[in-house]
Image 1 (tube, rainbow, N blue to C red):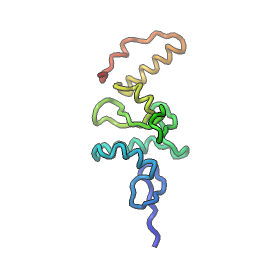
Image 2: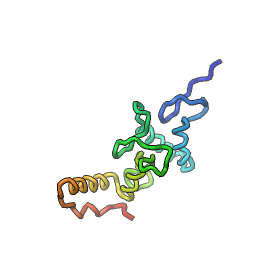
Image 3: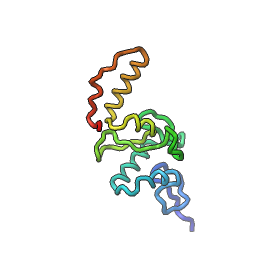
Image 4: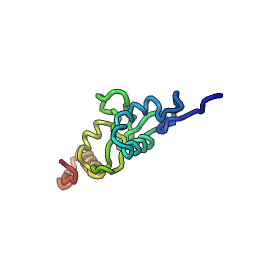
Length: 139
């Protein structure tokens, strides 16, 4: 009797072990968070599902859409988890480590506002509104 075909609960790749939940790729990522409790694991699974690009077979950054790197933590595109706002139960998203470092202690909206104003400044010299640096979660 043939064993049932099981799929990874994140990317839906066929599993070698029908009792497993994750493929090797997703399992390696989830191994970094599995000790944080069931609620956190569920949030990570949901974030990874949303970030998975089935057509390209890769995870994509929430903020930039770039293809993320899963196997080299020194790469600026290395896959990381980030909170949309800096509160414990806030939604998680997947992003590149360089973007997470830039976002640091900002909410998603604060980060986007600052990035947009900086882009305008670089493009045509538009003055940056200094009040945008009143960041709620800044340490």
